[in-house]
Image (cartoon, rainbow, N blue to C red):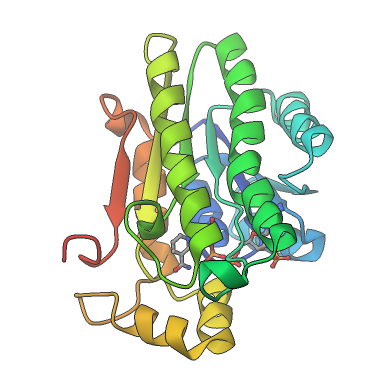
Amino acid sequence: MTGMVSGKVALVTGAGSGIGRKSAELLAREGARLLVCDQNSDAAEETAEGIKASGAEAEALEVDVSDEDQVSAMVRHCVSRLGRLDCAVNNAGIAGPTGTLETVSLDDWSRVQAVNLTGVFLCMKYEIAAMLEAGGGAIVNMSSGAGLIATPGLSPYSASKHGVLGLTRTAAVENARRGIRINAICPGSIDTPMLRKAMESDPATARFIEKSMPIGRLGKAEEIAEAVAWLCSDRASLVTGQSMGVDGGSVAR
Ligand code: NAP
């Protein structure tokens, strides 16, 4: 099989649903061997089974990205079972509570940062170490349009996604001469289970989301996967430290 990421080994977190699942599927179609990671082991298994049914290689692993031991074991597992780690897509995330800032509990705030920001930190910490040993690689972190502009009603989420961009840029510069490219994607409103749940939980958030896309429709997870695959591939060889909007124009307004 030849494709954009032929012969590479890729790891995707949050790959049991939405953007992560479509990214894992496209990377597999483009020639990568996949480690499909999610805290929901049944969902991860389902993604891996679908990939295997299409003739590509995939393995599922239950991982909570906020747990350092599990993240370090995930990267070790990838190298020992699949031989190396070339591409990592740090996609797992949660929306967290909706409501204005003064209504947010410290526990809710902390959980969103633990998954969305500390999770990306932990994943990069172990992925970069493995990639350095192998001589290079590419990392894609899933930020959000909410990482670039205000997102009323989602302050913990927005803060965590701003943080992902800071981590991405800093890690990209630290590793620019070490063969590792690190970029972030900032999706607009994408039709996934996470978005549906956020829209159902709060009418103000639903109205904000409905009006957020100048293109006049929600995005599809497959459209984010296209950017993921390209950033993972050698075709993006000069691209590092970027926050790539894939958002139907929502941040351009
Ligand atoms: P999704 O459909 O909810 O998928 C996210 C997956 O990540 C789920 O399988 C979820 O498991 C898993 N997950 C949650 N916490 C985890 C953890 N601690 N460790 C490992 N896996 C975990 O969401 P999505 O919309 O595809 O979102 C994927 C990423 O894109 C997120 O980072 C999100 O913030 C970002 N994003 C999404 C949108 C959008 O409009 N959809 C826009 C901008 C950015 P459970 O189902 O068990 O929670």
